[in-house]
Length: 259
Image 1: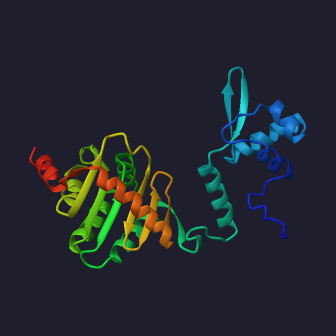
Image 2 (image 1 turned 60 degrees about the vertical axis):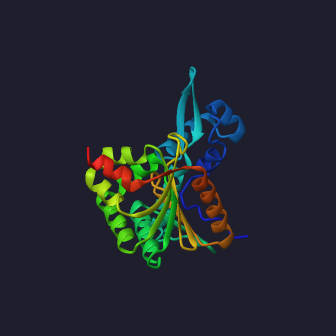
């Protein structure tokens, strides 16, 4: 078996210390000394080094400090930076039927390209929590959202969405009338669920025979073309759409704009 490349350039002590940490359970230096058999002075210096690298965190627990692995997103970012330093690109990393996307710009480009691939009067289905809508619009800018909505209108794409009850009011309050004008006038079949039901920063889009999952906060997503997985996501989406209360987006937008 080939020896793994030490992409992060960790010393042997750093590898042992990192391997002894948990994501959820904090460990004291004394506990880590026992489990890793690293001398205490070396261990403390090593933990500080891992902390500077963004791979470990320390928290006060009562009168003592405990150590944990850093959140996965930070670790992934370190891996990506290390891979890029070797001239390797993790963007577009894929398995058959699944393609990884990193970065808000790439997420936006992929979504736009998928929409462009639809035939006229095609169908675009999605689930977008209010908090994800706020994050995504803030990340890529209201002007880009307007551009996407104009593409949808020009092509006569039918949007079938699942939103929270406060979605339109919240986004209009933050991004204003131009956003709302672009949101209105589309061919839509929208269902809403009670506020607070969709408490996450990720969206699901189903476009043609492809699905896309996008976490705009962490700027990571995946395009799925695996047939059975897309069918599963379509079924979950359809259940939520059928269970929600119908909303006339255009009528609501008209009422808000008339205020």
